[in-house]
Length: 75
Figure 1 (tube, one colour):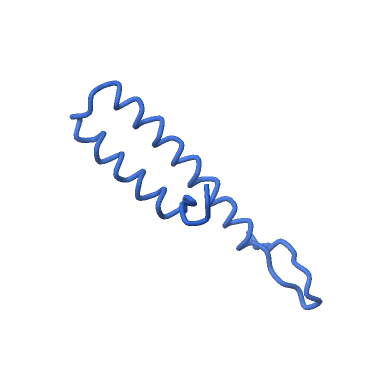
Figure 2: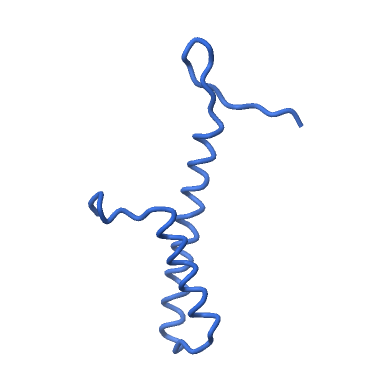
């Protein structure tokens, strides 16, 4: 997949939302429904992975010496 066609979190989320709307209508033939459900689960996994990656990146902070460390919160 080249850079122009690379799946983004936003495009995956839009695809997932569209699939959910189609499935909720209940007008999709069973075979198509199964395929759409499988595709939706792939989008869910993709989005979850992207969110986890973003969380890991955001949770890193730059120290005074220029090194990165995990952001720690007090509970």
